[in-house]
Length: 116
Image (cartoon, rainbow, N blue to C red; front, side, top):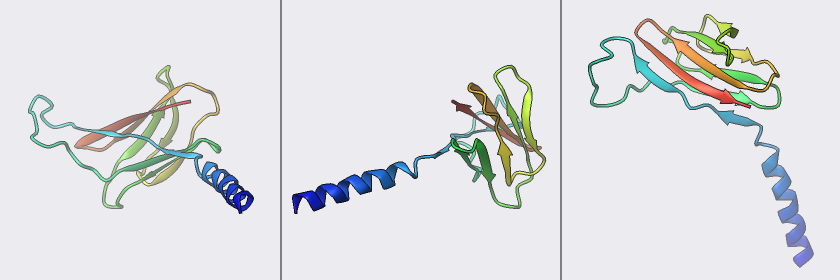
């Protein structure tokens, strides 16, 4: 019985590690209008950005009503990937380093970082 339990735990540990290839990127939202005026509550925009570490693909999802562009910059500040629409899939280079994600609209922008 102990061997069966150990075998189940061993197989379960492998199944958990197979789902660890995607990580969510923390995005910080900023308002372009009146940056000096303090808001009582932070701006909430339903953005979801996920980076797949195995395929080096970043998925950006949000409601279809939001119009924005997505830029990905490397540490030197050059654009390595771009999408004119918000709901998109972007390829990130295999080169290790820090990449900055900038999601830009007319009235707000959001940014985040990927480090690998």
